[in-house]
Every structure is written in C-alpha cells, then in structure tokens.
Image 1 (tube, rainbow, N blue to C red):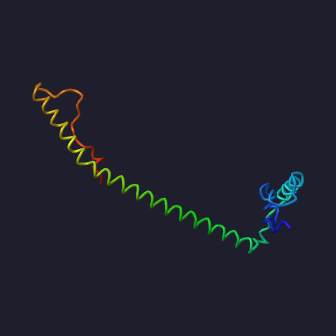
Image 2: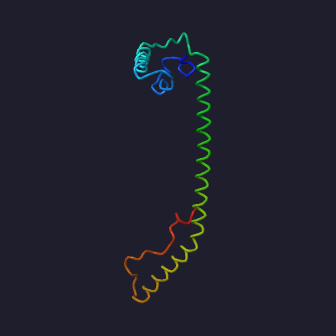
Image 3: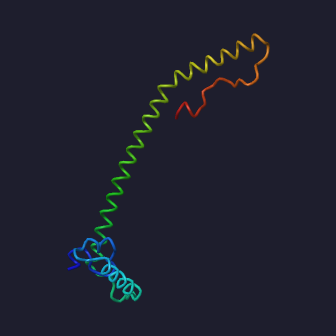
Length: 136
C-alpha cells in the first residue's frame, strides 16, 4: 500500500510523505517515524551486497534530471548576464561623448581660473575621463 505513495523503505518515510496517505492520522504517523528511527539506527552497510541496481538507476536518473535543470538555468543566467553587459557597454559608449564634452568644459574652466588668477585653483582636479569609464 505504501509503495503506491512512493514509500518503499524506511528511508522513504517522512512526515510530508505520510501526510499524503489517506487514513494515516498523527498518532500512526508518529509510530511510523519512530519505526523509521529504529531502522536507521540499526542499519549497517554491507559492501558485499552492494547497491540495488534498480535503486542506483533511479538515483542516476534523478541526478541526470537535476543536472540538466541546473545546466539550463546556468545557460539562461549566462545569457542574461551577457545581455546586461552589452546594455551597460552600449550605455557607457553612448554617454562617452557627453563625458568628454563635460571634461573639456572643466579643463577650460580650470584654464580660465588659472589665467585670471595666475595660479591653479585648489580643489579642482584635472579634467580627464577615468580609464575605467572609457571601456576596454
């Protein structure tokens, strides 16, 4: 009966799995969980018996499915990051002429102040566009 609900061994017993079985109340679920604890405490792996080939096949299928899902998610994320990078580079490229114009205006203002006062005013930095903003 339990096998039809995906519960074949003590390892398959969980509160969530047992709640899906009709007619199992809290008291019976508690007894099954206690039984599971006893079974797991007494378990000793026998390497001579090896692994059940059908169980191993199930695990390999589950692993392959999860791997495929993760690879798909990673490809989607990579594509999204590449698109975001392209948008950022395009926006930076579009703003570069404005930045160059502003840098030129600052440089001209600094030159005007220096010419009018005979010295470079304190606090004004050289008007250049940082290399990191220019792009690769």
